[in-house]
Image (cartoon, rainbow, N blue to C red; front, side, top):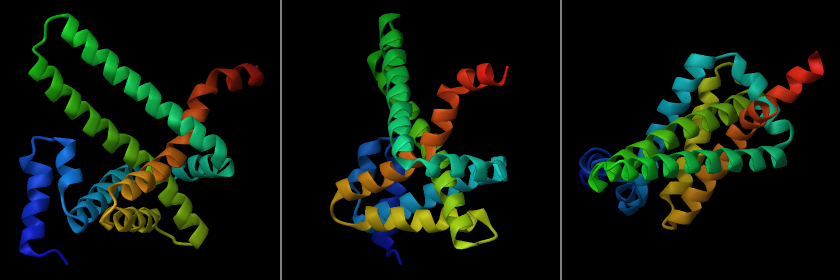
Length: 190
């Protein structure tokens, strides 16, 4: 599937870039697709492995009101963006070298995107598996990973980014909504 140039590009995009996110965007379409599929299945599969059966309830919550899931998923990204920006500013204010702040910021962004992406893809993947009647929720994550990889393989990077973000936003929207309104739910129960 990938020729030796593609494999070398993939290794450079992931390992040789020092976690520089722009390297992924500069890679050829098939390389972006392979990296996207690999990271999606690994991160989403890890979430499915850790949280297992609880994800179906989360998936039903996310996809029962997809318009609200999109809104709350965007809220999650804004909150994370605020936290990274605030942390970078605080580190700069206490005298941490700009190069160190840049590296820490890049590592934080990549790590957070992997965590949010893993949760979002796991939730949507579990829903896909449940909808298709598949017994193994990891198969749903693989299906969603294939959709994302196909979008990243296109020559237009924006298509891959939009498809990836849409899946993640819908997937993390339900858990974010539950987290935001957790206190209101506990008050109603009392």
